[in-house]
Length: 364
Image (tube, rainbow, N blue to C red; front, side, top):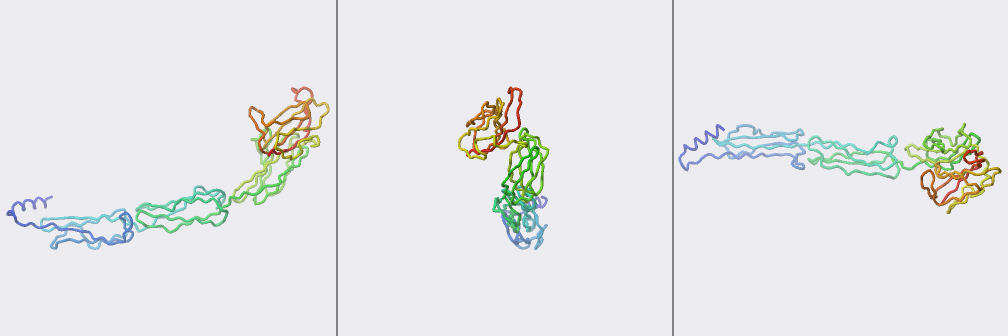
């Protein structure tokens, strides 16, 4: 400010038309590898061009100023004068020589150690503290085929133009569940022996549920055997056993079988035949029981009771639809199991004999 005032005073004392000195022209000369968006990605050297000659450096203007460390913005300045006329110039150097640090970011942990068993979404998590991230490899989705040592790679680019080295995410993928077949049960008075065949499993769990309380389940066996005998059951009570097989990738397959310990010979049941495949509602028929005044027919699907009826004759015609337990039911495709008891005396007395038999049929 003082220099400007003095220059103004002196100028007023000069004769009209007298020449005055021109202020210097200062131009920064920047040498370095340019990147994107005004950034440099290599060491930078700043020099200055000052014209005309005969100038005086007032501040800065250091020759060959070197900037070698990453910086979001380092200002380099130069001020010079010729006589009473001065000028200044500056340049801000943004330098980022470091590529982003990238880490894989899977959408969830493995379903089993190192292994995924259903669709995996993979993104990339970059870090760049200087210029920031411009873009990354698009997210990847993997849903097969099964394999080991599967590799997905990704890179990221920062705003200065540096690109990271490819980063690999290596994992195993197994979406194929074990196979459970030939689930069967043989019953005694108070026992049930459940057998199965399993392929591709590391362990089998056998779960028991009572038909009267299906939500109350109990694990009765865990291991690698192909059968198990469950003891101390209640005669005449309906049970459902679930055979649950798990493989090394945590894939699960479950199959079930219904049993009623102490069930009487099936010869009392006449129709439909055991494991019949039907396309229409069946007529359930059985041999008449002496002194029985009525019968109780109960039908289950997937371990859940869907019908209980009390016919007075040794037959019951199942319909395409019915109501039971306050709900509407239809005879849809699936496997059904029916049980039969004989009732004696008044129905209100609820005097039933032993289970007469049980059979399954499948509606196509």
